[in-house]
Amino acid sequence: MLSPAPTKAPRYRAITRANIESTPEWDWVPRELQEAVKTVSTVLPFRTNRYVMSELIDWSNVPDDPMYQLTFVQPGMLSERDFGRMQDLLDSGADRAAVRAAADEIRYQLNPHPAGQKTHNVPHLNGEPLPGMQHKYRETVLFFPGQGQTCHAYCTFCFRWAQFVGLGDMKFEARETDQLTAYLAAHPEVTDVLVTGGDPMVMNAAALEKYLSPLLDPQFEHIRNIRIGTKSVAYWPHRYVSDRDADDVLRLFERVVASGRHLAIMGHYNHPVELSTDVARRAVARIRSTGAEVRMQSPLIRHVNDNADAWAELWRTGVQLGAIPYYMFVERDTGPKGYFEVPLEHAWNLFREAYQQVSGLARTVRGPSMSAFPGKVAVVGVAEVKDERVFVLEFLQARDPTWVRRPFFARYDPAATWLDDLRPAFGEPRFFFEEEEPARLPVLS
Ligand SMILES: *Cc1c(COP(=O)(O)O)cnc(C)c1O
Ligand code: SF4
Image (cartoon, rainbow, N blue to C red):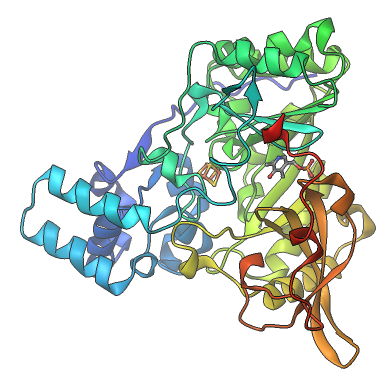
C-alpha cells in the first residue's frame, strides 16, 4: 500500500553555474573557492538542486563536507596549467567561443570515453550500429534512453560527464525503442535489460512508460530482469514521494512486477547521509511497496567516501530499509580521476574494514571492482605467493564468460589505481585474458 503523498511538494529546479550566486548557501563558501568553482566549471559542469543544497550538504564543513565534494567542482580537479589557462581566459573577458574551445581541448585530454564504451560495446543489428545501447556481457544489455541523458544533480566524479558537456556523440533517434526491441528479439540469451543514463528517472512517467511497456510483451519472456540505474533516490527522492507523477511512476513499477519480472532500482548511493532524510527513506519504502527491489552501488571516491565507517553505515542503513548492498566500484579512469582515485590496496583495505563491521545480510556487496576494458575485475586481496607479493584478482563479469571467477595475479604495486597500472606476477609476459580472443564478443555478432 502506498502511503499518501504529502501536501506541500517541493518543485525541482536545477542550480548551476548560472544561478548559484543567488542561493543563500553560497555565502558559506570562501571567496577564493567561489572563484575556483567558477573557473573549473567552465570545463567540468556542476548541477545541483535545492534538496541537495539544504538537506544533504553541511555548509559549516565546507569544503571538506562529503556531499559538497560530491556536488561542487574543486580547484584540484584541473592541472595547475589548465586551471591557470582557464582563469586567464576568464580574467581577460574572453568570449564564449574561446572559453568553450579551450575547455574542449582540456576535456579531450581527460579520457572522456573509457573502457571501450564507444568502440567495443556498441551492438549491431543487420550490420547497423545501435548507438543508444551497450552489450558487453552476454546476459545484460544496457539501454540509454535519449530523454534520460541528464541527472537531478551531477556527481563531480561522473564517468558519463562527457555526455553532459556535449562530447558524448551519442546519437539518439526516435527509433530507439524499436531498435532495442528488435535487438532483444534477435538475442534470446539476454536476460537482463539495464536502463541507464545519465539518469532515466529524470523522465516523466509517460516517457518512461514508452520505453518500458514494449519490454513487457510476451515475445520478451527471455527478459527476466529489468534494472533502472538511478541517482534520483539520493539526489531527488521526491521523484517517488511527492512529484506530480510520483504515483504514476510507482504504478508503472507495479505493472513491470505484475508482468512476472524482477524490477531492480539500482540506487547510486555514495554516502550514508543520502539515506538519513525522511524523504529518502520514504522513497525506498514506496518503491519497495510496488514489489520492486532497491539495490545500492557506487564507487569509492577520495574526499567523498574513502572512509570504511561511512560504507559500513551506508550498508547497515540500506539493509534496514530494504536496499540491498550490491557493488563497491573503483573510481574509473576518466575525468578528474587524479583528484578522486584511491590506490587499489587502500580500496581493498577500506572494503574489508567496512565489510568486517556488518552482518551477513550486508555482505551481498562485492568489490572493490574495476569496470575495465576486459570486464569487472575485483581486488580479492594482497598476498605472498612463491616469495612474491601479489594482488589476487578475479573477474566478476567478463567479455568472455569463461574468465569469470578464475583467480589471477598481478605484481604488487602500492601506487596502482587501475587495471592498466598492473603487470602480471611471476615474470609472466601477459595476463591470461590477454592471450586469448574472447569467445563471444557481442560486437562481432
Ligand atoms: C556492470 C555492468 C553490467 C551489469 O553487470 P552485473 O554483474 O550483471 O551487475 C552490464 N553491462 C556493463 C557494461 C556493465 O559495466
Ligand atoms: S548519477 Fe551517475 S550519471 Fe548522474 S551525475 Fe552521478 S555518476 Fe553521472
